Image (cartoon, rainbow, N blue to C red):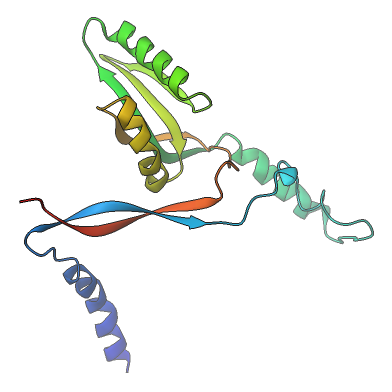
Length: 183
């Protein structure tokens, strides 16, 4: 029985890869799936469980536990995470400084409320936008941005953990789908 289980566990990854064979005349493309979520109650933002307990409910616990939770929350405020942004400008020409400022200004005018960053890393000026937790969120935002900035592409960067937004009540996932190649 153990040998059978080990054989299955060893062969399973190979079987999964074998299923991804793309037939001739087709390509795998990324597709987005939007899954509805429960709406987040904005009145709970910045609260802990202890702030929202009903009157008359007493929680008996060591003060060490509450201090440990608060310490952990404070420690994570400045934590850097690996996420995704969309690069809308990348150049090292003599006019790159002015062009990067113009790209940043144009983006902020067209997309108010979305974060945008201009940086210089010798010899390149870069403008990146958004703070996306996963690639699916970045792909969802890339379409409209690519209409405004055709050379836009997704990059992976490290940044401070972005706040949870309550603007959309759905989760976006990426799925590989077969698409027939135009002949």
